[in-house]
Image (cartoon, rainbow, N blue to C red):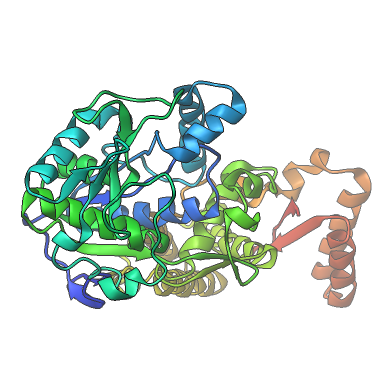
Length: 475
């Protein structure tokens, strides 16, 4: 099947065909770095990392650009709150972002341009817009984009100019000609960071940053532009107007937007305090690497365009599901399931078909569980000849989603076989495990189940392997 992607601009799934055969140029709106990344940021990081991995697995040469907004109103406010230079603040949170994405197994983009590094390019684009009649300097020193001069404004968000005028207003410190116009360049206020421009000292508006950085890095026209659903309007709508107004060319072929994050069925909102940082969620597990993969798995369990509901129960279910997959890998390793046989392509075909249908990771992960169940059946039937090949295939398929990359024993918290690890648990617990083992050998499964429950109440989880051995871990 050809790869089909839902295009937010046309509101249909389209067969994906890059502008240059075999080469994909993709830009994603990144973080505004004035605080730690939250779960909404995690979804953007993971989703578009997944898209890049899948495209590369399909043989495309992907050039992935994800920007950093390192100057805007929120950053200036945070700088004042902390009594630190704005660039010290942004550098701290850029470092934190990179630490978070590493734990989420997110690969760095090929380019990560920062707005402050592209001031010259931003000024050049604004001047071009002014020369073409799309921009004007106001009396207060700001420069604005004339929305009504750009035909087709509102196509991405599906809003007409008349609808946009309802509720539109002009702030008291603005001097724009029309309530719909938006700022390209902001005149500096006393004490604010600023750069010199033909219109006086100031700094770029948020929207123009991405137009300048994306076209400088990827060209006037490129294949995919991504970001959260909240950016569809006005940010991405304004990007189209600025970019196409300046270049006269179609800006982007395919627009991708991931859905909102909800906390216990309510939309996540930082303004209301209804949100979690990535670090807060990671801190709930003693192993940050394991917690990072659980978050990634939870995000990929939902289709990227659907709302993602976060809850403690959902996080626990995601961990339990990931543990089931890792346990299959661990069982195969413990039982020395090695094989040079070729694995049938049935699961690979189903997996690829799911991802080719607008990156349906939920369906693709369902295939991983189907494959894992078949491995368990082969293990139970002592059909070791094919198990090694199936395990290799399972890891390869999961790897294209950035999953199952850790050592199974570490992820599971397994302490290994009982006989080799008696010293790792106290004598009483070791004795109970041995009693249960003897009860199972004697066929006294009622007693064995009673001891299992007793151990679980003490935080010890047992896993019985098909060869009769038992492994254990602390819950």
